[in-house]
Amino acid sequence: MARVFNFSAGPAVLPEEVLKKAAQELVEYGDTGMSVMEMSHRSTAFQSIIDDAESLLRDLMGIPDNYHVLFLQGGASLQFAMIPVNLMGKSGKCDFIHTGAWTKKALAEAKGIGTVNVLGSSEDKNYSYIPKTTTDQISKDAAYYYICSNNTIYGTRHNTLPDTGSVPIVADMSSNILSEEIDVSKYGLIFAGAQKNIGPAGVTIVIIRDDLSDKAPEDTPTMLKYSTHIKNKSMFNTPPTYGIYIAKLVFQWLKDNGGLKAIAKTNREKAGLIYDFLDKSSLFSGTTSPEDRSLMNIPFVTGSEELDKKFISLAQAEGLVNLKGHRSVGGMRASIYNAMPLEGVKALVAFMEKFQNQNS
Image (cartoon, rainbow, N blue to C red; front, side, top):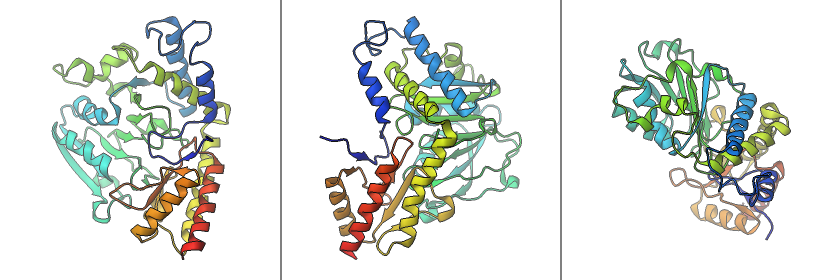
């Protein structure tokens, strides 16, 4: 069977070149005589893999020397708890921009540790926009200012950041990390689950500024301290070795294909094709505020549940899979991460036009 165009929100499509490279090295990696899945995380061979992964990521994102890069487990969900445990500190207070299901989960964890000030929320319109924040709203004594930079379910993203002064910005970038260039120095902490734009589920990337790395109370459980993982170079316990290996291959793929500047150009082209069609369509419409549209996740509807189901079924028969929207939005959702080829997006738009002509 031929490979399909997989529009899943996550776990998501991986570059075909990466999958083929991994297949070649599956049984025997280099001259080790074993698979990466079999080798000790304390071995010289794996140390080289994780060192290369970090070096490539630092190069791609321009990560400054005063930031640590960690390869952890537990997904974004564990970070929802680790962040307030480690950063809330003496202030006992943080600021939040609430933009959907993932900030709701992070909010719940932070509220268990201290005081949470919700400076803006888009819940009133089913999270279809990004609430704007002014500098004077930000709590001067907040331990951090929290955002989800791209909202997978609702298709929104933060296009600008407020001036938070000395308050560090913490960003969940699970669904848009590496999709375009960013200035890492504007953030105190960035985290991302790998399963959308980096690799398979099981790896969580944390990029944390040095001055925030050792703020956890003394009685914090060892595994929940960022300092534990920094001191042990992401190997306090056995890390997700094979996931880190695949991440390294993805980072290399990005570098070999022009880095983040090049992939951002392609991502804008892909998203533009779908948004341009939606804006002109007589049948389909987007569900997100135009000024806050994501480059990675594009939800859309026909206005008829029956037609939506028909579209999803027929699309799957055409090799356009995992287009069903999240239950809170309905309709369809095209997740077009870095590894989704331009050809896949063109095929989707062509099918949308065909379906529109047949069902209008």
